[in-house]
Image 1 (spheres, one colour):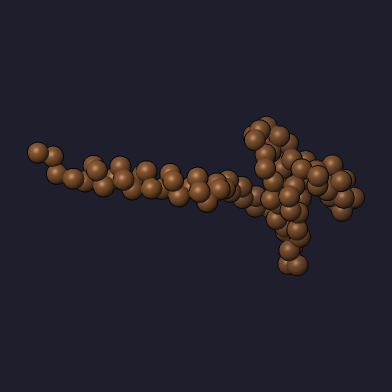
Image 2 (cartoon, rainbow, N blue to C red; image 1 turned 30 degrees about the horizontal axis):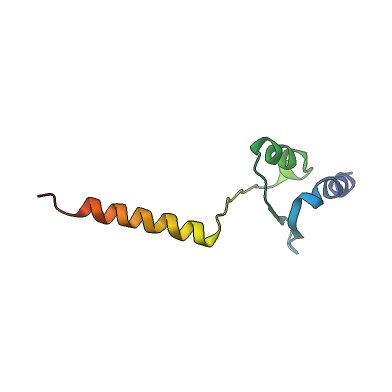
Length: 85
């Protein structure tokens, strides 16, 4: 029953994912670009194995965007650490 439901879930959502992989030891990995948190919630909620697993959602940022933000933060910290006259 669970495997049939998982097959339906894969059929319903696999086109939304850039990667969908299953781990040999159980569990899996999905890479997806989803802007709407309600859609993400529905995808996770409809997975029939969600009640039996730990779900970890990790947002990612493109490297150039992340490096620019880190550079701005470091510059702000450095400026704040300078003694005031």
